[in-house]
Image 1 (tube, rainbow, N blue to C red):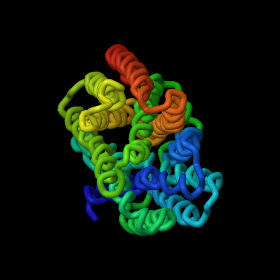
Image 2: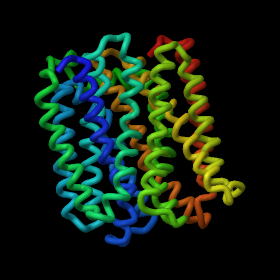
Image 3: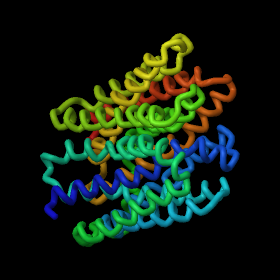
Image 4: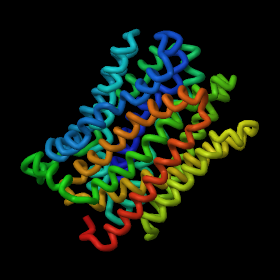
Length: 392
């Protein structure tokens, strides 16, 4: 397999890992019926896959730099395979949450080495555009799961749904093992030095903070869409299509961001545009003023997801740019992923708690709007840092 084909395999592996994140939302109604989950428990089950990332992502990224990118990715895919296979055989909410945390660890081992692997496999003039495509792995994997889940789960049940993704991951383990080149010796002698070099620079902190406020609202919005639509009486194929299209719309912004960054568009303009669209889209989707306009509300969801997709691709590009050196790319991406996971961990339970307190979803846009405002301020600070700082 040529280098570009191997790069696309790395992207495909990230999409498969994201399938495990996206497999839960369409299964929530079945899990609630089977295990008696409350709405807040469902929120924690949605975010539990981010527990490993919230606690250990930067360490995993640094270990990936040190121990080998190929080995880390294969180990992560194997972890996803085993956790999903075991999860299909448990019927206890606590055990399922633990296994979701383990899947989160596997997700990290697959996702964090990817930017550094892409940098090894493709020429620099193609890196920004390919990184834009790679950064769409989460919405693509989520969209595929959301589309298939409402059709598959009523027919076969959620345990078989878990087994399906275990099988897909097992195939990917073998493919990665055969196709990716062996790891080269690491240029970093001590893991702690990579951590210290990353955490001593303001750039990775700014990028990580902006990803946190983005991911908190995106997972909350996409994660609860099936439940929101089910409460409105929408089910089956239409439910799957609506939620999948909403998640897939995020890919448009990701890919567009990669092209715009390659063309020289300023990162702060892309970030401001993304956060503004998310704030406006959420207001349209959840404001009481649009209660009698379901398709207008859905247009707000599409605006939130599609133009909001400018944010993650731009931030991944900044994470690579602001890494202390090429040897710390996975470490820097790990720090960004750790804060992203933190946002995804607290976002769904926060939105669920606000919904319970207010008796509906109408104040969701208050949460997302506040997060977007914070993200816009951080983007301005980052632009000042890039203009007057050392570029790190």
